[in-house]
Amino acid sequence: MPPATEVSTRVLTIPNVISFVRLMAIPVFLYLVWTERDLAGFIVLVAAVLTDFVDGLVARKLNQVSQLGQFLDPFADRLFIAAAVIALMIRDVIPVWLVVAVMARDALLGIGAIVMLRWGVGTLPVKWLGKWATFALLFSLPLFLLGAIFEPMGQVTDPLAWAVAVSGTALYWWVGFSYLFDAVAIARTGGREAVGKSANL
Image (tube, rainbow, N blue to C red; front, top):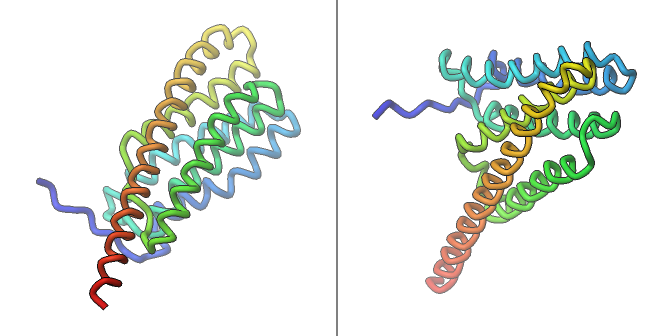
């Protein structure tokens, strides 16, 4: 078996800088879409998708996996997805129900996080299925925008975008429930341990 990746407490690492740049790109993307500079917004969105792949790769290759990075990377992903779906909904590129489906899942994860904090547990390990679900959504959103910019191209990109978005959203929810079940299991274990400690006092 390969050795476990060492997780450091470093803050200033190349992957963390990449994730921070992705966060800073969110208001830029929103401004560009809001002002109907869709092509520039498309470029920013594609760059964000690429950096999502790059920061994890760099972290493993350079052995720069950090506690901050484990929080910052998925946080940047979720925030960018939320911003993108809301912006594209406002521009009538995607329907309201897709936005609700994506945002409600993140609300579900928020409940799980509250449960975990209640028992003093940090973040759960990232699931690979979750990475695939996130990538699917990040991949589909530029395709939707591209079809809106070049309408004839949309005849090709829109069906692909919908196939990826629907499958990604379904997987997004599957992983969300998986995280929630893990959090509930931790809560139950913590509850039993707390009862056991009280009985021994």
